Length: 288
Image (cartoon, rainbow, N blue to C red; front, side, top):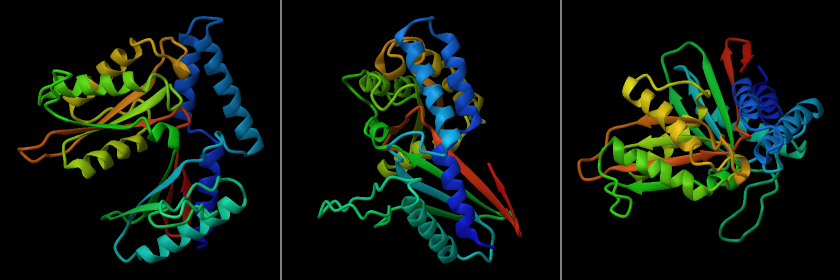
Protein backbone atom coordinates (compact mmCIF):
# COMPACT_ATOMS: atom_id res chain seq x y z
CA UNK A 1 0.00 0.00 0.00
CA UNK A 2 1.17 3.52 -0.81
CA UNK A 3 0.51 4.95 2.65
CA UNK A 4 2.10 8.29 1.79
CA UNK A 5 -0.39 8.92 -1.04
CA UNK A 6 -3.37 8.28 1.24
CA UNK A 7 -1.99 10.64 3.89
CA UNK A 8 -1.35 13.24 1.19
CA UNK A 9 -4.98 12.99 0.07
CA UNK A 10 -6.15 13.29 3.68
CA UNK A 11 -4.13 16.50 3.98
CA UNK A 12 -5.59 17.86 0.74
CA UNK A 13 -9.12 17.16 1.95
CA UNK A 14 -8.49 18.67 5.36
CA UNK A 15 -7.05 21.92 4.07
CA UNK A 16 -9.76 22.48 1.43
CA UNK A 17 -12.92 20.64 2.52
CA UNK A 18 -14.40 21.50 5.91
CA UNK A 19 -16.00 18.57 7.77
CA UNK A 20 -19.84 18.42 7.56
CA UNK A 21 -20.41 18.86 11.31
CA UNK A 22 -18.45 22.14 11.33
CA UNK A 23 -20.04 23.44 8.13
CA UNK A 24 -23.54 22.59 9.38
CA UNK A 25 -22.88 24.40 12.66
CA UNK A 26 -21.73 27.50 10.77
CA UNK A 27 -24.76 27.35 8.47
CA UNK A 28 -27.06 27.17 11.50
CA UNK A 29 -25.23 30.14 13.02
CA UNK A 30 -25.96 32.24 9.92
CA UNK A 31 -29.69 31.73 10.44
CA UNK A 32 -29.37 32.59 14.12
CA UNK A 33 -27.95 36.06 13.48
CA UNK A 34 -30.04 39.10 12.57
CA UNK A 35 -30.53 39.84 8.88
CA UNK A 36 -28.15 42.59 7.74
CA UNK A 37 -26.03 42.42 10.90
CA UNK A 38 -22.22 42.41 10.82
CA UNK A 39 -22.30 38.98 12.47
CA UNK A 40 -24.54 37.46 9.78
CA UNK A 41 -22.52 39.05 6.98
CA UNK A 42 -19.26 37.72 8.45
CA UNK A 43 -20.70 34.21 8.67
CA UNK A 44 -22.06 34.41 5.11
CA UNK A 45 -18.59 35.37 3.89
CA UNK A 46 -17.17 32.39 5.76
CA UNK A 47 -19.68 30.08 4.08
CA UNK A 48 -18.80 31.47 0.65
CA UNK A 49 -15.12 30.93 1.41
CA UNK A 50 -15.77 27.30 2.41
CA UNK A 51 -17.58 26.57 -0.83
CA UNK A 52 -14.93 28.27 -2.96
CA UNK A 53 -12.09 26.38 -1.25
CA UNK A 54 -13.87 23.06 -1.84
CA UNK A 55 -14.58 23.89 -5.49
CA UNK A 56 -11.03 25.03 -6.26
CA UNK A 57 -9.28 22.54 -3.92
CA UNK A 58 -7.41 25.41 -2.30
CA UNK A 59 -6.74 26.14 1.39
CA UNK A 60 -9.75 27.34 3.39
CA UNK A 61 -7.42 29.71 5.25
CA UNK A 62 -4.03 31.12 4.30
CA UNK A 63 -2.69 29.86 7.64
CA UNK A 64 -2.71 26.10 7.15
CA UNK A 65 -1.64 25.71 10.76
CA UNK A 66 0.66 23.59 12.85
CA UNK A 67 0.27 19.96 11.78
CA UNK A 68 -0.82 17.39 14.36
CA UNK A 69 -1.17 13.66 13.69
CA UNK A 70 -2.54 11.01 16.05
CA UNK A 71 -1.79 7.45 14.96
CA UNK A 72 -3.56 4.45 16.51
CA UNK A 73 -2.10 1.21 15.17
CA UNK A 74 -2.45 -2.54 15.86
CA UNK A 75 0.24 -4.85 17.20
CA UNK A 76 2.87 -5.57 14.57
CA UNK A 77 2.81 -2.08 13.11
CA UNK A 78 6.00 -0.04 13.00
CA UNK A 79 6.01 3.57 14.13
CA UNK A 80 8.92 4.25 11.78
CA UNK A 81 6.79 3.34 8.73
CA UNK A 82 4.04 5.76 9.75
CA UNK A 83 6.54 8.51 10.58
CA UNK A 84 8.27 8.19 7.21
CA UNK A 85 4.99 8.23 5.28
CA UNK A 86 3.65 11.23 7.23
CA UNK A 87 6.81 13.30 6.81
CA UNK A 88 7.03 12.52 3.09
CA UNK A 89 3.34 13.38 2.62
CA UNK A 90 3.75 16.67 4.51
CA UNK A 91 6.75 17.64 2.40
CA UNK A 92 4.89 16.87 -0.83
CA UNK A 93 1.73 18.64 0.37
CA UNK A 94 3.83 21.74 1.02
CA UNK A 95 5.40 21.54 -2.44
CA UNK A 96 1.90 21.24 -3.97
CA UNK A 97 0.82 24.27 -1.91
CA UNK A 98 -1.84 22.38 0.02
CA UNK A 99 0.11 23.63 3.03
CA UNK A 100 1.90 26.91 3.72
CA UNK A 101 5.45 26.52 5.06
CA UNK A 102 4.90 27.02 8.80
CA UNK A 103 7.88 25.34 10.48
CA UNK A 104 10.35 27.86 11.93
CA UNK A 105 13.54 27.17 13.88
CA UNK A 106 13.14 29.23 17.10
CA UNK A 107 16.93 29.73 17.43
CA UNK A 108 17.83 30.84 13.91
CA UNK A 109 14.40 32.11 12.85
CA UNK A 110 14.76 30.16 9.60
CA UNK A 111 11.67 28.67 7.98
CA UNK A 112 12.49 25.14 6.83
CA UNK A 113 10.27 25.63 3.79
CA UNK A 114 8.77 22.13 3.91
CA UNK A 115 6.89 22.02 7.26
CA UNK A 116 9.46 19.60 8.69
CA UNK A 117 11.64 20.07 11.77
CA UNK A 118 11.94 19.02 15.39
CA UNK A 119 8.42 17.89 16.41
CA UNK A 120 7.15 19.26 13.11
CA UNK A 121 4.83 17.73 12.27
CA UNK A 122 3.85 16.51 15.72
CA UNK A 123 3.01 12.79 15.72
CA UNK A 124 1.41 11.00 18.68
CA UNK A 125 1.41 7.18 18.63
CA UNK A 126 -0.88 4.76 20.43
CA UNK A 127 -0.89 0.98 20.00
CA UNK A 128 -4.36 -0.48 20.44
CA UNK A 129 -6.16 -3.82 20.26
CA UNK A 130 -8.14 -3.10 17.08
CA UNK A 131 -7.28 -4.90 13.82
CA UNK A 132 -7.00 -1.65 11.86
CA UNK A 133 -5.01 1.57 11.98
CA UNK A 134 -6.45 5.06 12.31
CA UNK A 135 -4.65 8.29 11.48
CA UNK A 136 -6.25 11.53 12.64
CA UNK A 137 -5.01 14.88 11.38
CA UNK A 138 -5.55 18.38 12.73
CA UNK A 139 -4.41 21.77 11.40
CA UNK A 140 -4.06 24.18 14.33
CA UNK A 141 -3.89 27.80 13.22
CA UNK A 142 -1.42 30.13 14.91
CA UNK A 143 -3.94 32.87 15.67
CA UNK A 144 -6.33 30.61 17.54
CA UNK A 145 -3.40 28.90 19.28
CA UNK A 146 -2.41 32.28 20.71
CA UNK A 147 -5.88 32.50 22.30
CA UNK A 148 -5.33 29.35 24.34
CA UNK A 149 -4.95 29.66 28.10
CA UNK A 150 -4.16 27.71 31.25
CA UNK A 151 -5.41 28.37 34.79
CA UNK A 152 -4.28 27.04 38.15
CA UNK A 153 -7.10 26.74 40.64
CA UNK A 154 -7.85 28.34 42.97
CA UNK A 155 -7.69 31.56 40.98
CA UNK A 156 -8.09 34.30 43.57
CA UNK A 157 -8.73 37.29 41.23
CA UNK A 158 -11.56 35.36 39.52
CA UNK A 159 -12.84 33.93 42.81
CA UNK A 160 -12.61 30.50 41.14
CA UNK A 161 -12.27 27.59 43.51
CA UNK A 162 -11.17 23.99 43.02
CA UNK A 163 -14.48 22.72 41.71
CA UNK A 164 -16.56 22.70 38.54
CA UNK A 165 -17.96 26.12 39.38
CA UNK A 166 -14.39 27.42 39.36
CA UNK A 167 -13.72 25.62 36.09
CA UNK A 168 -16.72 27.36 34.54
CA UNK A 169 -15.42 30.79 35.62
CA UNK A 170 -11.98 30.36 34.07
CA UNK A 171 -13.38 29.03 30.77
CA UNK A 172 -15.65 32.05 30.46
CA UNK A 173 -12.72 34.30 31.36
CA UNK A 174 -10.54 32.77 28.63
CA UNK A 175 -13.18 33.24 25.94
CA UNK A 176 -13.97 36.76 27.12
CA UNK A 177 -10.28 37.68 27.00
CA UNK A 178 -10.04 36.43 23.41
CA UNK A 179 -12.72 38.97 22.33
CA UNK A 180 -13.21 37.39 18.92
CA UNK A 181 -9.51 37.06 18.16
CA UNK A 182 -8.46 33.68 16.84
CA UNK A 183 -11.23 33.91 14.21
CA UNK A 184 -14.45 33.37 16.15
CA UNK A 185 -16.80 31.59 16.23
CA UNK A 186 -14.46 29.01 17.65
CA UNK A 187 -14.60 25.56 19.17
CA UNK A 188 -13.47 25.50 22.79
CA UNK A 189 -11.49 22.43 23.87
CA UNK A 190 -11.00 22.07 27.62
CA UNK A 191 -8.71 19.82 29.65
CA UNK A 192 -9.41 19.46 33.37
CA UNK A 193 -6.77 17.85 35.56
CA UNK A 194 -3.35 16.38 34.94
CA UNK A 195 -0.11 18.34 35.21
CA UNK A 196 0.67 21.48 33.21
CA UNK A 197 1.65 19.63 30.03
CA UNK A 198 -1.01 16.89 30.15
CA UNK A 199 -3.72 19.46 30.79
CA UNK A 200 -2.87 21.28 27.55
CA UNK A 201 -2.61 18.01 25.61
CA UNK A 202 -6.02 16.84 26.83
CA UNK A 203 -7.61 20.16 25.89
CA UNK A 204 -6.27 19.98 22.34
CA UNK A 205 -7.29 16.33 21.96
CA UNK A 206 -10.92 17.37 22.46
CA UNK A 207 -10.77 19.22 19.15
CA UNK A 208 -10.77 15.87 17.32
CA UNK A 209 -14.34 15.36 18.55
CA UNK A 210 -17.25 16.27 16.30
CA UNK A 211 -19.38 19.29 17.13
CA UNK A 212 -22.29 18.12 19.24
CA UNK A 213 -20.46 15.02 20.50
CA UNK A 214 -21.04 15.09 24.23
CA UNK A 215 -18.77 13.75 26.96
CA UNK A 216 -19.99 10.32 28.19
CA UNK A 217 -20.07 11.61 31.77
CA UNK A 218 -23.55 13.21 32.12
CA UNK A 219 -22.23 15.84 34.55
CA UNK A 220 -19.57 17.00 32.10
CA UNK A 221 -21.98 16.69 29.15
CA UNK A 222 -24.42 19.03 30.89
CA UNK A 223 -21.54 21.41 31.63
CA UNK A 224 -20.55 21.48 27.96
CA UNK A 225 -24.07 22.39 26.90
CA UNK A 226 -24.53 25.01 29.61
CA UNK A 227 -21.16 26.65 28.91
CA UNK A 228 -21.92 26.93 25.21
CA UNK A 229 -25.08 28.85 26.04
CA UNK A 230 -23.24 31.07 28.53
CA UNK A 231 -20.41 31.82 26.07
CA UNK A 232 -22.86 32.79 23.35
CA UNK A 233 -24.52 35.21 25.75
CA UNK A 234 -21.27 37.20 25.97
CA UNK A 235 -22.19 39.01 22.76
CA UNK A 236 -18.67 38.87 21.28
CA UNK A 237 -19.89 37.20 18.09
CA UNK A 238 -18.18 36.23 14.82
CA UNK A 239 -14.79 37.93 14.47
CA UNK A 240 -15.71 40.09 17.47
CA UNK A 241 -18.43 41.97 15.54
CA UNK A 242 -21.05 41.18 18.18
CA UNK A 243 -23.90 38.72 17.87
CA UNK A 244 -25.21 35.42 19.18
CA UNK A 245 -22.45 33.10 17.96
CA UNK A 246 -19.16 33.39 19.82
CA UNK A 247 -18.54 29.62 19.95
CA UNK A 248 -19.76 26.63 17.97
CA UNK A 249 -19.24 24.13 20.79
CA UNK A 250 -17.49 23.41 24.08
CA UNK A 251 -15.76 20.02 24.35
CA UNK A 252 -14.41 19.02 27.76
CA UNK A 253 -12.07 16.19 28.78
CA UNK A 254 -11.23 15.17 32.34
CA UNK A 255 -8.24 13.32 33.81
CA UNK A 256 -6.97 12.69 37.33
CA UNK A 257 -4.77 15.25 39.03
CA UNK A 258 -2.27 15.43 41.87
CA UNK A 259 -3.85 16.47 45.21
CA UNK A 260 -1.77 19.66 45.24
CA UNK A 261 -2.67 20.81 41.71
CA UNK A 262 -5.80 21.69 39.77
CA UNK A 263 -5.09 22.81 36.20
CA UNK A 264 -7.63 23.83 33.60
CA UNK A 265 -6.45 24.38 30.02
CA UNK A 266 -8.39 25.92 27.16
CA UNK A 267 -7.51 25.11 23.55
CA UNK A 268 -9.19 27.58 21.21
CA UNK A 269 -9.91 26.45 17.63
CA UNK A 270 -10.97 28.92 14.93
CA UNK A 271 -14.06 28.48 12.74
CA UNK A 272 -11.78 26.77 10.16
CA UNK A 273 -11.78 23.65 12.31
CA UNK A 274 -9.77 21.48 9.92
CA UNK A 275 -9.52 17.82 10.85
CA UNK A 276 -9.74 14.61 8.86
CA UNK A 277 -8.92 10.95 9.40
CA UNK A 278 -8.28 7.72 7.54
CA UNK A 279 -8.97 4.14 8.59
CA UNK A 280 -6.61 1.50 7.20
CA UNK A 281 -7.75 -2.12 7.35
CA UNK A 282 -5.73 -4.50 5.21
CA UNK A 283 -5.59 -2.91 1.76
CA UNK A 284 -8.75 -0.87 2.30
CA UNK A 285 -8.59 2.82 3.18
CA UNK A 286 -11.60 4.85 4.32
CA UNK A 287 -11.54 8.65 4.52
CA UNK A 288 -13.56 10.50 7.14
